[in-house]
Every structure is written in C-alpha cells, then in structure tokens.
Length: 202
Image 1 (cartoon, rainbow, N blue to C red):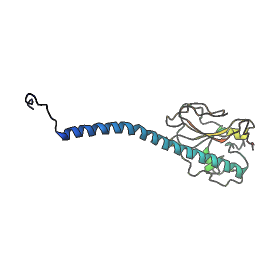
Image 2: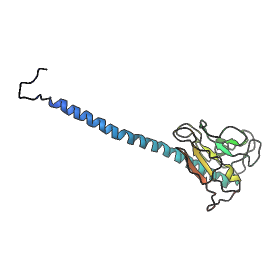
Image 3: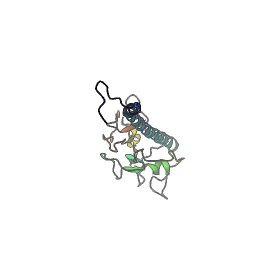
Image 4: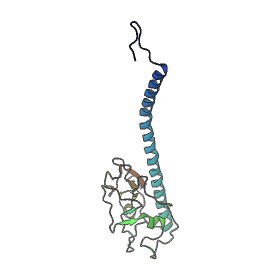
C-alpha cells in the first residue's frame, strides 16, 4: 500500500478495526469464563462423589439396623475380622489399602449377602441391596469404607473415603479420629464416635 499524501493519516477500514476489537473481547471473555467453567465442572463431579458416599453411609446404617451387626465378617466367618471394605474401581495410590485378610469387598456386604463368598452363609436378616448400584468414584477409583470402628469400643470414626481428582490418598485414614480430609481427598463420616457423640457399638 502506498504511503498517504503529506498531511493525511492512514485510515484502516472500519470492519478490520471491529474484527480486531471483537477478537480481543472474545479472548478476554474466554480467559474469564474457562477457569470458572473448570471450577464448576470439578464442583459438579465432586458433588457426585459426595452423593455416592452419603448413599454408602446410609446403606451401611440400614444394614446394621437390619442385621444387628457391622459388616465386618471375614471370609473365614469371623464376625469382626475386617477393617475396611473397598468398592469397585482401582485402588488409589499412596495408601495402605491393599488386599489382605482385613479387607473385604463392599459389594459382598452391602450389594449382595455374600461376605464369605458365593454359596456360603450370609448375614441373618439381610434385606438388601443397601446400595444399588455400587460404582467407582467419579475418577474411576474405589471408595474405601473404614468399618472396624463399628466393631470396637473406642472413639474412632467409621468413614467413607475417596482419593479425589488426583487419584491418590493424601493421608492415612487407617485410624480415623476427628477426621480432616487432606489434599483433595473427600471424606464422609458415617458414624462419629468422638467423645461428645460416642455412638453405641454393636
């Protein structure tokens, strides 16, 4: 383009200026809305985890009302053998939860009456399923229910734990007293047995 004659300034076409301003506004708007959308999406997914954990806790309490015992029967039939129950899904990193004689399957206790496996005696008066369907948390990992406090006479709490969005347990919840979730973990207290709210043990 030739230089304008002396004394005149170069004039840009109005449409070019409008397009540049519109593009700038769109970029700024996206910069404002995208973080808000991501925060809302994370809140919505975490809310689903809270709803799942509340359902598991309510099912656990209904189970105990019906059967009169906590869901702690081991594979060998011992009534208070289990410390924790794991739901479907992957096991989160950074945790002591691993398959051993103290770990049971949440589905076998709350979803089906098969604490000792198929074709073995179940819990008397079991009237489930107490949680249906039982699924992994929103990130594909197992919900962990720390159940042994229901079978012990101390101040430890029965809790449900999700590892949260980072898929790792940020604390050891093996001896839960006055629980505070660490990192992005999500914790639901099913039975608070603290000194001021000591719950009866069955």
